[in-house]
Amino acid sequence: MTRQGTPARRQLCAWNALAAGAAALLAGCVTAPPAATLACNDSIKSAFKPDAQTTVVSVREIKKGAALTAVDSPSPITMAADLCLVKLLIGPGAMAEKDKNARAYSEGIGIEVWLPAQWNERIRNYGDGGWVGGGHRYPDQIGSKVPALVDANMGYASGTADAGQPWYQDPFFAYLSNGQLNLESLHDFTTRAMVEQAVKTKALVTLYYGKSPRFTDYDGHSQGGRKGLKVAQQFPELYDGYMIGQPAISPPMFGTVAIQPQIVMRTELGFTSADKAQAAAFAKKVDAANKRAVVQCHKPGLGFLLNPSSCNYDPLRDAGALCNGVLGDGVTGNNADASSCMSARAANALNKIWYGATSDGSWDATQSADGRAGKSLGAKQPWWTFSRSAAIGGLIAGADTDNLALMLQDVRYAADASTTARPPVVNGSKVFTRTCDG
Image (cartoon, rainbow, N blue to C red):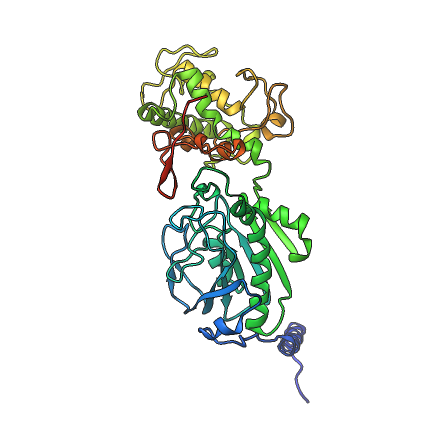
């Protein structure tokens, strides 16, 4: 007679049998990731011809362990899988610009498509932020930002685009050499590049793997988020899903917010970013005030605010923020560090910057959390602005007038080298600087 053992042993044997059966069942269901039907070499140049405007610029095989430096990465990224990087150029370019040395000149839209050897049958395109640009069209450069490389490491096929201009984060492709708006490139930037990115990435992926993707999704934030919302509304057939973060919608309004710190500094403190030493000193004081706001508004001490709109920190009411002996709102300053302490005037200026632009330059100390969150505007506010703890030092030490110049369609309003750390507006052989001729 065979010994059956104790009840606990019998239960363990039953679980082992169940687990073995499940493993056998799953083994029959699991399929290997689709392998590429094309070789990762120059044969793709002749195989991929979706239309007369599309050219395969280069094909590059990248091995697992390779270190690649994305355009926005401070250090190289180690690739976790073998993959194929294909670079495309989609014409026509900006035909209105005749000077090939001008920032406005472009031969078309550059696209990079990342094709992992172990494909998960999904496309996850990434929409770059800011003024985009990059080395997408150049064989010896990586134009994509970090997320595209990470997506490829995870098995997604991923396409990115330079939005029709190769100058990374440079808005001055938007002006022709004569200073007029480059409407062709602006259309590529805002619309056509997004469509081409979706269509050409999917076409190449389908050809390369010999099957269509199960899902095609879009991931973008800031400018890329705004573009994602635009595509979802105007071209809903291009993607199955969207992951949108911090979309830069309503640029005519929020673009003016970027110049508001300079206006407050000029009216309240008597200087702007053109006065580099004073602007840099004020930026340091603002950074110190932001850190004090985080400490006072967030008791758990994480080092950042979980809900910035709930913070109504006021440096005029913080003795530790004000310089020794400065009379604030019910407090007397006791900060002896000249590099971080504020005068009452500087503290009031910061409060105005945090409150945002108003029609008469005033600010409301009783602003509600909903007001700070952007759920409601004050009676004199045209738009919302920065929360406590927001890193606005760059807008204090340098003027950001890119959107303002575009809205006014006048390149003279773009900040020049005397007011910003960014390069001046350079189109061809001409350098445009802001003038004050009325």
